[in-house]
Length: 207
Image (cartoon, rainbow, N blue to C red; front, side):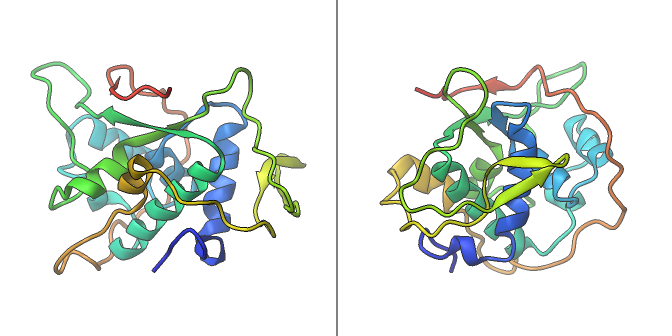
């Protein structure tokens, strides 16, 4: 079980760190679906199809075992917490004309998983993102565009203290029954630009 004391040892951790670093180079908000795109687990054109309501639920077009995806979301929540990013739930609605329709991430609609996918992580500070200083931390920089990245991939410091209840509700997604395995998607990712949705409503703004 991935937890605060061991999540940095998970094989997914450095991949998540690199994806988050590439987002925070230019943005102040980390969006889980964008992390999936940058980890080559989700084609951007399939994401657009889902946003337009042409895919019944997002996990249908994500590559990977569903248990692994749950673990990825959990690690992303821990990592965002360590970076002092603030969770902000977003209401995902179908793009296009017609009646407003809520979008679904999972086949079963499990509440905690839906919440984990829909929670964005926001840098509340002024100016560009700056990683928090951690006493006893040994830097191992991520390389992005030939330059040292924004924060470290590994730390020798003690793990952070207990997380808040609000954070735990986002960082601890889980699955039930037989919905814990299976392969999704097939096509090779085709990177291209995608403007952030304009109709998403951020409900819980960072304090």
